[in-house]
Image (cartoon, rainbow, N blue to C red):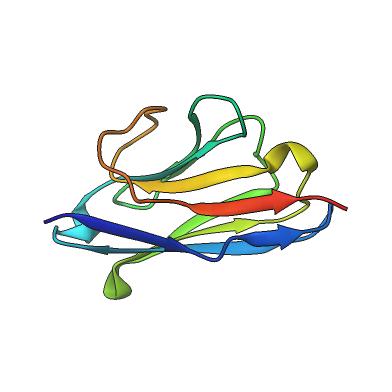
Length: 117
């Protein structure tokens, strides 16, 4: 059974940083492209970043230069470093087994990120 478990969300002030983690199990993590998507309050899912295998990275324009995706295949873990956070980055962040898909079929339960002063 595929499992994706996110952690690392929280409340942060504008301009702050967070590091999200996603531990994967139940599949050969190292051979799959992985993504992060988010859902702002009252809105639909938004693709924000993907990392391939090998590790080519892709970002939505809204987060390019502020967020960094990475992976540790030895730990079956996907990361998302969030820097220079803005209030519009608030939302539920999901890890997904997919590539640049705004509505992935396989994703975790999410971790909440709230950016507020």
